[in-house]
Length: 623
Ligand code: AHR
Image (cartoon, rainbow, N blue to C red; front, side, top):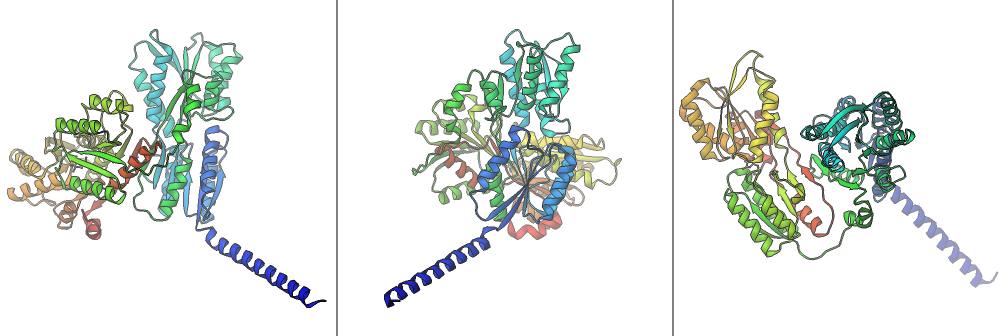
């Protein structure tokens, strides 16, 4: 063989060997980096189009990450199977669980147990309490309210009779949809709910139950509201088989698949549906952030629903890309922020977080302080509208009185983010998103501490409540949450509620007043924030009693001030209210500028602290 041919063959062989090595090395290094995290997904069923969509969304999003493996289980509508599925998933050593449930009551303890071991994302369908890492889903009470509004529109002035077809009774989402629907329908004089069927989310059960009911009853309804589209389709089938075609049908879910609600509306089989995002994409996105130990994970992400009826279904198909569109925009976002004031340590930390996040995120921030004056806050917002900023954000001083100025913002096409406090307006489309805490839950947690620390069920406990700014969301909600728990314990007496305006000075003044009137009869002070609690501590000491011992004190915020007072034994308990909202506000402002639909509500994650816990945590708390 000629030397050149031999050399060529040798070179070729060497090249092939190298190639094999490269491939082997690459695939080895690939398998090494391939799986950093294993995520378990427990589905309650894969029969309903909505649940199938959720799974597909999870799969699609997960396929973008090469370092995760996702294991899926399907409980086939059997709660015991779902409990076993979660055990099996844990047996596979999953790093995080994503779970969507049908039966909230049965699944709540199972999810709490899993949450003690690994992070858990509850998806689409809620459980009771807060024992999970993150809930992503919609506001089911709001869906019920939207269904009630659609009912009044469909029935018109003459009103009519309605049948409600409910999902599983032990499902939180069925209870909430029903409550939202009924609370609103009951206010209408000309609309009456004449019957209720429970069809457990199932199409065939809805069809059978309705057929049986209509055959034996003379009263025909004018409209049927089914808690999901699968049951709405069952309703349609029952009516069709009985040759009835004048009854309006409302469903919920709005999936764009054969037999999904969107297509049912298009085919005129049902009249209205509510597009209910499954949250599958967000679940994977947040799962990765949780696994990478991101510390800014919210507690709840409430996604937005859209009503689709025969009136707007064509437009919806035409425009729906707008809901998922994302225009890459290099321009700086201009954000006008109307801060409520500077009343507390919490507020200073909040303002600082907003300024810092704007710098880090390169947002052009104009932050103006309204000094706790609503008129001034409205004037600041008007000025932002005049300037044509991209996004307006504000922390509303009180709940009411914003309709007019927010309508002006809407007319000018400027989206509005509510920061830390919610509002009451006629039209909720006047604001785009709320980022903040669950103040009602904070009040409940404060009351729970009192319940857990009273000596007996008969011992009388006299409580002074120091309220925040009158008519502000935190004052109203913290009062409500406290009441929700305390009213079940008749020996807990709120002997006076005094407004300390969230300030130390006013808190002290109100406590002095209370001490003059009740003196050592006071057992507990429940303060709506730390600053007023510190004011109360000063007043109690000046009165000659020992705060934290003679009079127990609980507060909300968990700022550094509270941690010091807890460590010194002068405060007994604090409930956290997270002021570090800056990063989330900047992210939302940027997404709005890019035309992305953002969640309707982002609720922050919060803890509680006793004296012992505060001693351990105090160094970490820098605000
Ligand atoms: O809106 C949040 C509340 O406002 C804080 O709890 C209080 O300290 C503040 O001023």
